[in-house]
Amino acid sequence: MNGSMKELMDKIFAEGKKCGFSDMEIFVSEGDSFEVKIYEQEIDSYKVADSKGMGFRGVMNGKMGYSYTEKIADDSIALLLSGARQNAELSDSKEQDVIFGGSKEYKAVRSYYPKLDDVTVAEKIEFAKKMERTAKAFDRRIKSCPYCLFGSNTGSGRIYNTKGLDLGSKSNSMFCYVEALAQDGDDFSDGLAICDENDYEKFDPDKLAKEAAVKALSYLGTKPIKTGQYKAIIENIAVSDILAAVSSCFSARTVQKGMSFLKGRLGTEVASMCVTLVDDPFKDGQGGTASFDGEGVATMYKEVISKGILKTYLHNSKSAKIDGVLSTGNASRSYKSNISIAPTNLYITPGTRSLDELEKAMGDGIVISEVAALHSGFDAISGDFSLPAKGHVVKNGNKAEYFRQITISGNFFNMIKDITEVGCDLSFGTNGSIGSPSLLISNISVAGE
Image (cartoon, rainbow, N blue to C red; front, side, top):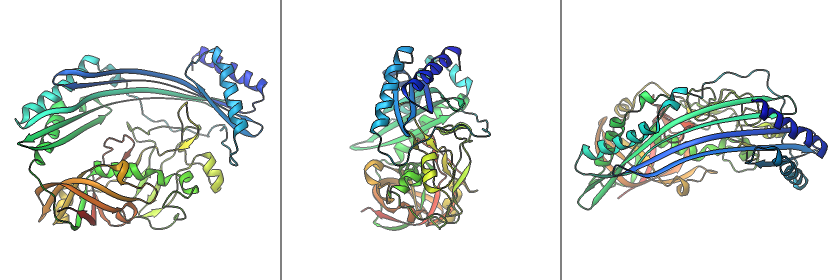
């Protein structure tokens, strides 16, 4: 922390004492982002943004009050303290948040990659243009790339409180997407390819463009498969999307409010014994990698589900106190928000066989490559889902015809009991911090033709 920032924080604490606050805490967040979208080799949109803010919370008469400001300066102090005092006076919560003094030890993590910041704006723009050029040149039926984007983010945060806590973190990331649109007569289909890595050398515009184009072309002229029950493989990115939609069920606060199917299920079988779901804050380069959480509690690796058995919920200090356990280091916050709960890097641990090997093991069945409408077709409380999907048929262990315009339905918690094998192809897809390998499932319901 630089001298001027520490001086400002000390002033806030001094003035806060005069106002009647006992314990106090400040969370400072800074970040910048870049995004360029290309269409027909021209810049379709160009966004550069930076954000900075400071969140304050303090205890007054046993109640916690919150406030924030986007102006980090001396003349914001009075409004910051006044807002928190009013917020505390209005609080009627029986269980209050606490100001944490610090853990004994914090594990070092790697969440910042200096070389990513060396990639120039010109390089990012040219990368996106090359993805579009390559995709359109791949096949005459690729008519356009309606979504061709390159982006990057850098952020830092710091927690400082009156109990002596002073912790800082820094992270950055880089990502790109390309969507190819194919047309044959009156038939259209699309394909998407994604890259989210911490090493720019692993970004390959030609590979991504061809992947998107091949996906788009594969679904031209395809039809739904027949309605019925099928053995199925759900590919890694589709599983990560589904897991992200249901992830709030693992939050202890959601459980305590009676809004999770997992209420009362600790120590019981909730998945197939081949499923181990971990929350891993130490995984390099992922969106949730951190040595401490939003309260300054040291993060920890934990098995949420271990060989099918539910072992723990995700806790912050408040939920842990209610349940009489220790925090799992899953407090989450922004400078604008109160303390909540979120996973760090939540994923199903991979097995040993590739997607091709899972197809061989399945014999006959289907592969679900993409799902859609998770915002409307998924009930995060019960786990029930009804989702549009597409993929391909497998016959005698070999890829056969592609299909689309089907709907898969069921319940997430029943589905994970039907998993017979987990693949080795762990991917975090578009979610950054929630991932999965491909999953072989004994039975899934399909509504088709």
